[in-house]
Amino acid sequence: TGSGGAAPDAGPPCTMFPLTISQDTTIAKGCYLSTGTLSMAKNTTLTLSPGVTIVFSEGAGLKLDSERSLRAVGTASNPIIFTGEKKTPGAWHGVEIHGQYADLELEHVVIEYAGAAGLLAESPTTLKMNHVTLRNNAGVGFDLYPYYSQAIVRNCTVTGNGGRPMELSGDLSNLAGVFDNTSTFKGNGTDCIGTSGQKDSSWPTLDVPYCG
Image (cartoon, rainbow, N blue to C red; front, side):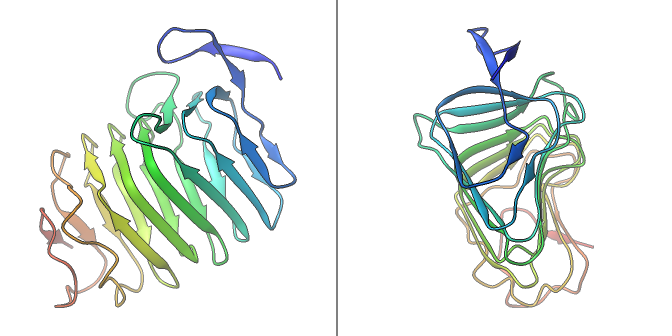
């Protein structure tokens, strides 16, 4: 490993984050600098320990394709933080997960200063989000394509983003049970949930309206 980039609290330099994962890997607590896009082998799991901070340089991001898994479970006192090297919206690409048989678990996580979306989740098999904060991203906070997904979103805060807090696309027939009233979506550029389909009576009531 090498070093480069200052830690968010101006502490010791961050360790370089690995850009290639060929087997199940656990990242220990600490600050890491990512200068590119992660490449993971199929059927592998990346686990981030409580207290991990990943600082992304311009153009860098975290992307998972089908048959890969990310488990980032922090705690209230040791959250996991995804942030930009520059503390400005659009400073890095964001977190993306694509395809069936991809699994994402986020708890006590902060995603900030990303580009078009803080988090893009396209048809993951499972998506669990609890106490996740998506803030100060240039576009939407959260872009979700929920078809094929078993998604649960609880106790999340989506605020300070340049666009809408959330975009929902694709088959929206299974939104019932995905969200409840424990999350907040206020304080963004446009405070409504963007949708690609007609609102259904089964959709949950949130603290902002739905809009086309």
